[in-house]
Length: 261
Image (tube, rainbow, N blue to C red; front, top):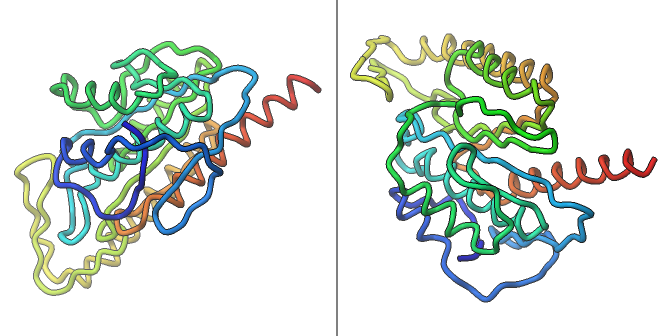
C-alpha cells in the first residue's frame, strides 16, 4: 500500500480507514501539496531514526459530532500516513508495544494488520517501555484525561531522554461547544448522563475547563521538551502532516549539526 491522499472525509470504521490507502505507483516528489495531496521528498539521512507510534483506540475516540468523521478515523489515517512518510524519508517505524520498527516500504500493510488485531489493553496512553535514546515517540489521541496521568506517562518515557510528539485530535464541538437550550451530556466511556440545563450558560464553563486543560497539556509538553500540535476533525489533515514532517526534519538537521560541530 502507499500513501496517496489525506483529507477531512473519514471512513466509518477501522477497516474503511485502512482501505483508503489504495495501492498506487510509487512516486518520488517534493514535499508539497495541491488540495489534500501530500508527497515527501527522499532524504539521504546519515542513519535511520526509530519512530514509535501510539494511536489511542479508547471509546472516547469514537466520538463524532455528526457531519465530521470520528476522531479515531483521523487518528488512524494520520498515524498510517505519518508512518509512510517517515519510511519514505529513510526512518524506521513501528507501533509501540505491537510491532518491531521497520523501514519496509510496505509499512502501512504491516501496521494496518497489527491495528486490526483485537485491543488487549484499552488505554488512553501506552504502557511505558524502555526505549533507546535515539527513539522518537509519537502519541496520537484526544488526551481528554487528567493532566496528571499524561505527566506521569511522559515522565516515565522521558527517563530515557527520548524525543516525544503529541498529536491531539479533537472534534470541533469539543472545542467550540456550540450548543444552546436544554442539553444532556453523555459519556463516551460509560453509560453516565449529565443534565446541564441551558447549554449556552454551561458553554462558558466548558470552554474555561478546556482552556485550563489545554494550558496544562502545553506546560507538560514544555516540561518534557515535547512537540505538541492539535488537529480538528473538520480540518484537512495535510497541513498538520506537513508540520509534523517539517519538525522531524528540523530535529534531524539540528542533531546533525551537533554531531559535526
